[in-house]
Length: 163
Image (tube, rainbow, N blue to C red; front, side, top):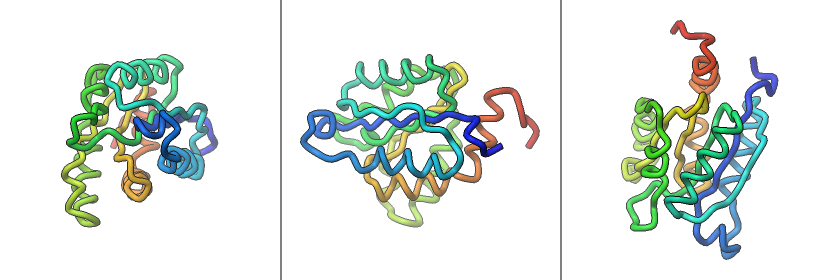
């Protein structure tokens, strides 16, 4: 049912982007790719890589009933990369296979894919998936996830629960 019945949002996590010091290329790319897959992107925002800001944004997006929330950025190992921890703070249930798939398939593209600490979780019926901040990695990972995204959001509604 790829008729924009399902909604998506994109949260770019970037200190420089939130401060206006860097153009956000990954967020618009993710939104465009999701639209092409048939999702209706209802919200995008850029926030600093701050634990509390990320938690607040994730709660707001899922409380609004967005089916799929994509984050971009803050998944590495630097001291300011807080996205995985903030995501786990709002997690009701984890779907580790999604993040494992991105790292596994991503390794064939670049060995640095294994350094991503991104998580995939469910909160209030929203599927939240952390992507790296690099636009190339955003594109590659959405391509990797494309075969499972529709089934995942339908399952969260209690539909298409058979595999």
